[in-house]
Length: 93
Image 1 (spheres, one colour):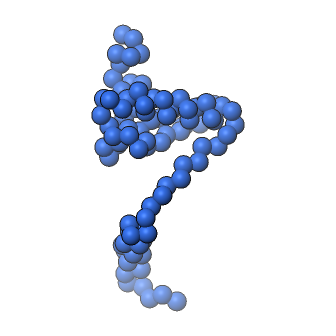
Image 2 (image 1 turned 135 degrees about the vertical axis):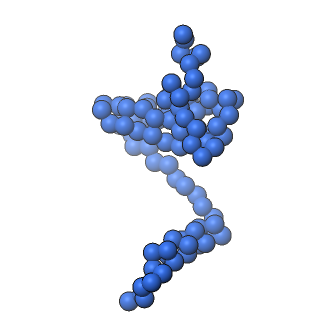
């Protein structure tokens, strides 16, 4: 069985919340990242390309920083929901 004919999960990919997630080990350290790619067969090659780029950057010693951009309209309700769950029965100081 060739590497191309293996199921995506056998090649370090898995579906997570409708997106592709890749996982790998480098120098005994596990790494994983959920991509922005929909978990459809058409995006398998792109997800593997992201994984390979991540491995190469780590081998070069460059840290992979992923910026998450969230609009304020989305962030405020999410924060308030978390805040209320954490402080529902306690008063602020």
